[in-house]
Length: 483
Image (cartoon, rainbow, N blue to C red; front, side, top):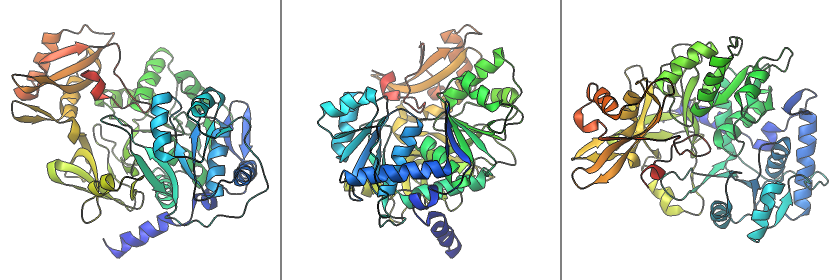
């Protein structure tokens, strides 16, 4: 690592979240429904909640889980946890008792901030519950002794191939992510983000919330529907959205709506897409209906958003671009994507074995993703090593097959997985959501693949579904396909 990269990482990681995010100002920074918060109000509310938590005995040694749907109160609670110096445990509000119990048991929070629909689940598990609707308030507590290396949050991996693990992200990790986003996406104080992503997730938290508070702009929280997003992007006042972040399933629904309700969105400065692969056909459709293709980016729970297509210059379908400032990317065995940078975490919560297995001897994180780096230096993600299909002794990466099948007019969505087979070991199988505009015929789709792929990569069977099983961020849960 050069001295220049080391200095850049130190700069990007400098400070702590309370210092960087809770700034003074009379301008509105967050909106939700008919509620607005200025920077002064947000800072004051977060400090008073920190005082209330301090009065309940919460210290910098503790963890506090946040188990609630998106709201301004969620943001205040989260920032209050950061201000008191505790570590926030991010909870998917869609988790039911068994899923929540695993995370609670693993993280052992001193308290759970929960809204009314979820408070009963936490209470039934014997946890101390703090009402999100009636957050405790108190005198502003002393500033905690924090550094960039202090743990800020535990985010649990999506668990698409096993039980979720808790990735511990420190203050420096989050600040490097947010500051990198400001630079590469030209994010300024004039921007208004239409924020429809879940706040518990890295994309919505580390990019959406932190980026807004770091950059001096503002954000409008909305539950995702195409109508709500377009309404915020087409306002005729100073609160009109200039940015939107989403996942492919959101862009698919947005394009469906725009097909029926053509709307000029050419004034929107940037659309960003991630958390799951953006099919090339959807990329082109977005370019037509949105006025520009989304900037596709690549990230992981353990390292934040680390690679992105350029703000200026070509945005290439099927490729996720170049590394963020201070991030190094290389390919290891089996073309596994390896990462090192100021935003990459240092380990899993109470899991030293998993931590040791996750890094190379020289400190690169083993992502488990298979990549390809082009002559222009851009990265493409070809699949997950654990999703590798071994059929007749040959290796098949599902994403390569999916990219071909997605080009067929009868395919709306597709996921490819390996099904156990006495003959082949595993049989390449395509799970397809048919397009409403063309008839899906299994033999024709297989023939379509055979014209474009080696025979061993082609699906032996096509199974139609009404929808693909996905997690909260739109990632296909392949383990559920073959059950």
